[in-house]
Image (tube, rainbow, N blue to C red; front, side):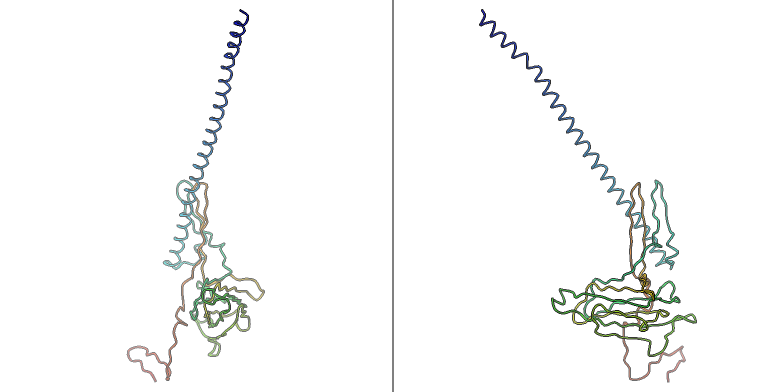
Length: 287
């Protein structure tokens, strides 16, 4: 009897532990699932927030792009000046808008990524919006590298620099004298500096660069006044626009040439044994 009772007691004792183990396991599984669910929820919310931010960023970019396009239209089609578009803006429902940042944009460096061998690029040292104004440029520093594909590891291109100067007086452009119209500085090495009195800050200039031997890369042009202060490059315009959509803001800056006045001044050369003459009117005659 005693052995039988002991066996029954042991069985009953063993089975009495099962309910406690199940509860503990259920708590562990529930906690694990809850933590996993919370983690998945956080990730899902983060992905949703990032997707919303990306959508807002795209919309804000297009708002900024609209601002640049409208400023460009005003300059190219309506012949507006940079100062007239510097305060432009436009607002739309829901806090969506763009504002011009053109008045704050500066471009102290003119760069050409590559200039092919014996090809021309031009630098305008005058303000196309105000050609009567002096350039204030007392020093021009030009630097360039060799293009490894064209030049190899040894050859470095030389640069021919030519420039024409003029003044604006009496309602039109005038050349100072026959000897100062056009200057050529051939076969110079990088970097080169053109300074007063070779150039006069009271005159306007158009420069022409042409590399020899091989292509030139990273052609950089910087301008300074008589005090050595860097000047904003006047030949290009830099438009800026800041677009806002929701809580997201995007800024866009675009640089491009202003209007190409005097664009063909160096583009051709006419050779003649006689003096050139252009007839004026139907009855015009040449000597």
